Length: 178
Image (cartoon, rainbow, N blue to C red; front, side, top):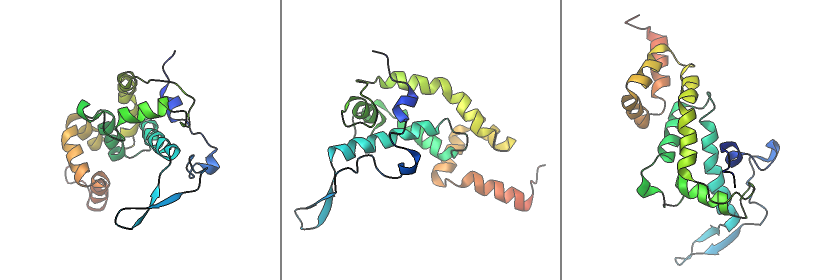
């Protein structure tokens, strides 16, 4: 069987007008009581599969030049996490496994999905996707991301608006080195 394409993993199951509604809302929510007496909503299997599928939607955002860099970096950290995290709930690998193998999935059944094959496809397109994103920024931002990605990532992990704040500061004060 052919491996699924990235687009088949992230294709919307519903028309755009209903994208904000969960695919799995066909059954009414069930509320249960926990041991301490507080009420909580019980998730259906369909809800859980849909949530895994929604997480995979982030992969499609990597190709969108308008997607903020901090979101792309977060998605890439999730996709390329250490192998010891692959079996954790909602890891990239677990999302592929559940979405590809569940009859409740919003995409057609495709069976086992090789996460390394998907990662390889992402790697092969990543340079092009990041270049398209970086073209929207001034030269100094492009240079910083290319030459010192860890430094940029460190600043953005502390403050996701760091680049925007730097751009605003330069606009307001002018670039002292220009």
